[in-house]
Image 1 (cartoon, helix red, strand yellow):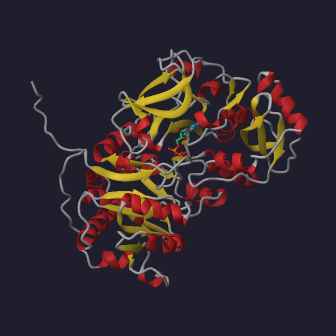
Image 2: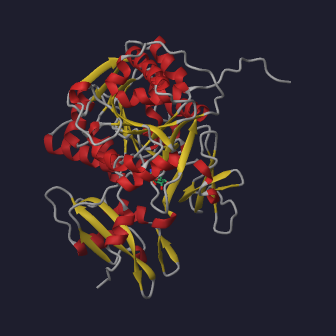
Length: 539
Ligand code: ADP
């Protein structure tokens, strides 16, 4: 017997329509590429997204067409998101730090018809666009006054495109399983693979991440996603913030500690999310300048392992709750966020960080399984480790154009991460499979060593890679950057580690570097480090 409830599809357009009707006056504040800070409301955003849908229709864009973006977090990017998905087209976000060859590959693979670019990325698209024959035009996301000279064959000014259009657009109703957006994984091995999100997955993910023990989003919050809209949908925050009517603050191109602090403080931001490298910059700025963030309540740190020292510093020095999170582009992207269970709040303060350093518990909607090398499910005892497999309504079931099918087997998605799950349901990433170091037939976790090294007061950031070794296969090499005004010493740091891990885990050498290569999503590029130190030999 079927239930007798209305069958209304879950559509992205309904998020913004709801916000405009119920949170009309709530602000979206953006730092623009042109310079000034721009402010408007959900009511304004809804009008402009409808204009965008009208403009796309006038350009001949059809449902299912892919529309590219290469842009920072800002209000125009937000309008393109909602305008494209809302009308039934697919918003394809691209990472601007990719090489022009890679952008050309993505334009062709996705078969983008138009691409929207911020002024910053004009040189990039000028190189890539001529190699994408299906591309009909490039919309430069600015007004007439700032329109640059360009070699592009068909450059369109964003504000002119919207100018001639009406404020009303009837959002079409269609199957909620229709594709809404497309994001490629960074493709550190082989070509990038496309993850094609659906309206349904996007809305269910929004409900999930807004929950109190996840990001805790509501109309009482002022939310600043530092994580870019081109990195796995800014972790879904622009959608979930819209669903809940939270104020949104978009940092645009300025992501250094000082600029971020100014936005976070000035807009009374209560919740933010980003990768550890971003928070390193913010913490350094606040410490050096004696700044605080009095409105800030919670931060999600994810994308790569949050050092325990960072989680502790945010809590103890600044009174900010740090929530460690884990996810993947393939998971819309949130898979787990860490909060303590009620009984854990009574644990001695020194014990809590051990739990909080784990990657956290899945929300309803994500199931996890640990698969051993022999293919069997491993116990959730916090010890047994294996590949983390996941499933759920916002987990990718196949890549765009069916590439990389081997990750999808028996209804599960293989994450390529090695993890444990404890009896309380807390998942901990041991390492990415490809970053683990095999020494004498045993595995060493680079994440664990990095976390321990970053507890040393002389060290700002750490990365550990495996170096080929004639006897042991591979041995760990520790690379570090110095904390401000400090000078890390090899022997002293290695002794410090020796007191904390098994002797055979201690890296064979430590090298101090000025900085690390950082990828487009703000993570340390281990592939580049492995390449740089390919010929390195231990003394
Ligand atoms: P990529 O890093 O390849 O550009 P994603 O952004 O989708 O693509 O990254 C997903 C991967 O990032 C995960 O599979 C995992 O290896 C890593 N990751 C994400 N969050 C964490 C975390 N909190 N701790 C450790 N690793 C993480």
